[in-house]
Length: 355
Image (cartoon, rainbow, N blue to C red):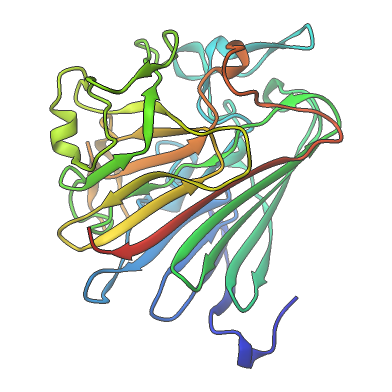
């Protein structure tokens, strides 16, 4: 699989052991993107991106102490599953059989349960070709894990392309009907980690509908049009101005319904732009939804890599995924995976500079 050195222009992945992170893998392209991935939680720990002057900065939030990834910062940059987002009361039925999952937040199941994929030590191997460099991570989730049925074998590749792209590709197979909904939970600040908040960033989300939620952040009912609401981001808008709209309640933690749906075609979901540095991140995905979380609940408890406490708005998560609580909502796209099928999902973050 490895090309001759003369044809490979990226930096082959370098692995270093770490007592908290498992393994730290570093890879990238000179003058372009460089990433650091940890095998504990299949976690994107860092991503260095050039600004309009070619000066790189780490744009991914992570705790100063990697041991904090096990508690207050457990989802930072991690692969979350088996089910990203929330399942009400941790309950669902599949093929007429009820299941009870482990629960945490307000008695609901969040991001796979009390011991989700973000806590696991994944196996990893390097991947590098002429066009891509990165890491392939593997995990087996046994039957009954957090209450989910079926033995599930998962792979996640995290690769950097020569054209300043960071690609996440997820695959999974099972030996019994189960639920699968995977995503990466990185928080981004395109001015640089620890550089302040993202309220001056501009955000566009290519969605005509969103999912209203109750006080427990569970869907309240049908999807609603964004037109005339605080969630209309179809044109780029400063995040501070978006959150000042009536109904935004100071922050987003909502699912946006992307369209069209139903195939494996990459489609543009969102664009995030930092005018002060020029950095621009385009989100493309095969997933039907995008959870936008503006980190309104950050309170300075987590100390970042640069030594700066992370306060409200320190970063933004753009989580490509299926919809919250969809196992209990027949009208939503299905997250059921059956034996003989393969779960496939792909998200590409495309970086550049400009408006």
